Image (cartoon, rainbow, N blue to C red; front, side):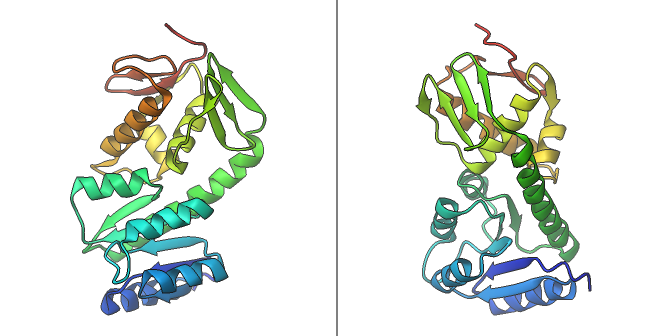
Length: 237
């Protein structure tokens, strides 16, 4: 037992899966909290402030997406969705709303453990970077306030999801340099699978839409086709 003392909240109504995941995580030293409904999960979330949430989407009293939205209004805690829903639309919706990862049932124990470790590690990494990324970044009409984790275009705040902000913040640190898809994926999600590049592209499309960029334009972020993305060091027309 590692005795890592991380608190993990599992919100899952399937008894066998709940017991199985709890047993696996407890054996690795995690402090595990369990809930079989969204409301019970929310009470545990508010009272225990877990370090990570494992969330099923098919809850008996509410859709897991509703639970995810409530979490994101209050916290940036890592959320790992564990669901039988395997279509791309459900995955993209959960990720766009702030889920850090999405694991489809059935799943392997080793994979689940690895994704949990990655989510916790990346959470700590961004907390550490939050103390380093200070002040503001300016490029043309784009402004990033690192201290407040807020972004503005033409003086108007642009509401980004946690993942979208992390992507933009990462690229701004390397402004003028190309970051490959693999590099970005490794830092943001820590896990590269067959759907990772698509997931990154979906997030980037949403970012550009929120920035008000025309299709094909690259006012702030340039796509090096087949390679990666580059935040412009200065505004390019």
